[in-house]
Image (cartoon, rainbow, N blue to C red; front, side, top):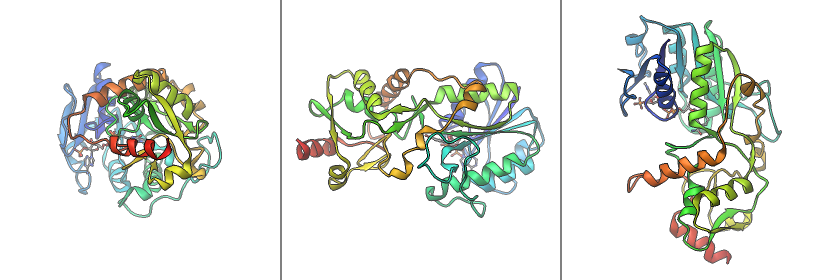
Length: 325
Ligand SMILES: NC(=O)c1ccc[n+]([C@@H]2O[C@H](COP(=O)([O-])OP(=O)(O)OC[C@H]3O[C@@H](n4cnc5c(N)ncnc54)[C@H](OP(=O)(O)O)[C@@H]3O)[C@@H](O)[C@H]2O)c1
């Protein structure tokens, strides 16, 4: 099949492109060129922020377009300019209006779509993706919307999915600081499983809207597995939320944060989306142990100075251990 990946040079898009190439498809990746496309793909350098940015690929007939954009204007122009039988859009679980309810399905209330073409910052990520979805679903092509939860595994530049096995592999003491919230629901979908499923949806020309997350797993179970994968013998030191807050420790992502965990009760259901539809449509998940093991290998391979964007530094880890011992 002739597949155009809009993006295809970063993480998920690149993994999709590689998987499609592996299965023998003819793959074109379009991006501005900050990273190379996978070997075997045709690379088209173009800027989707320009009104005629898609001109180099708009004369062709595509069997499928796969788009990972966050910008409604980029998606609207793609819908306007590209000739494709199938449009697959990678969206996010953040499109839902609230997460205080558990196991929401695809028909749950959504945020209002972003007004305008440009998402200025991540504060309106969910709204921007709603606007992108609306454009794709109205495109007239077979439309597939994949509302992904946290993506994990090798290549996770954010460090959210590699931090825990890495920290247990490199403890600063015989204990590791963890949030005292073992029942918090987490989920991560392995980038390779998500990418493989995207290619299967393309091959089968499956349309529809799908939640796509990993299996919901208690934080305590993820940490126990991360400790095994890390292999140092360090054990968790659970620290209550109010103590973490006093010590300036954040949740989810960013400097001095504990990833996979969200302290705000309004987000407690974020990782519990109902994925029945996706599983019925062929999403197959590998064991979490494999994702954590390969995320650790990726962390170990990061060059000096390539800073992770989640987790505690050794200095912060030691500070919290000292303050809570
Ligand atoms: N990470 C998670 O846990 C998570 C969770 C839920 C959903 N998602 C979704 O999963 C997807 C992740 O995809 P990814 O890892 O491949 O993506 P990404 O990091 O968003 O990459 C964006 C791609 O688009 C290209 N691009 C950006 N601006 C462009 C422009 N103006 N013109 C042309 N190309 C442009 C980039 O290359 P250049 O910069 O070189 O142009 C790159 O190839 C996103 O849709 C994200 O919203 C992620």
